Image (cartoon, rainbow, N blue to C red; front, side):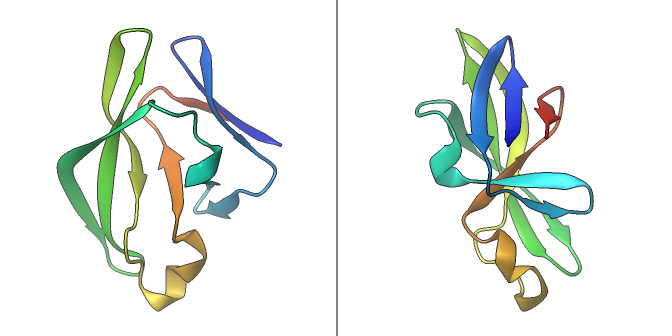
Length: 94
């Protein structure tokens, strides 16, 4: 079971994460409702595609661009479609 925690709250938990490059990608359905807010930030990975970002909000505090996902990953990364990963102080334990 993998768990993502930020600001003292569990924001995601799943026993079905996909690990890519050391990052746990959680199914979007495993993230607590209301925690993620889409931002305009994007980045490009040569083999995964273009990533989009979410800010994470818990108890009135926001961690900008602390989660990312690939809306349409390239074929090599198809397994992370519909999943989100965390960084920027979000603690992920497995």
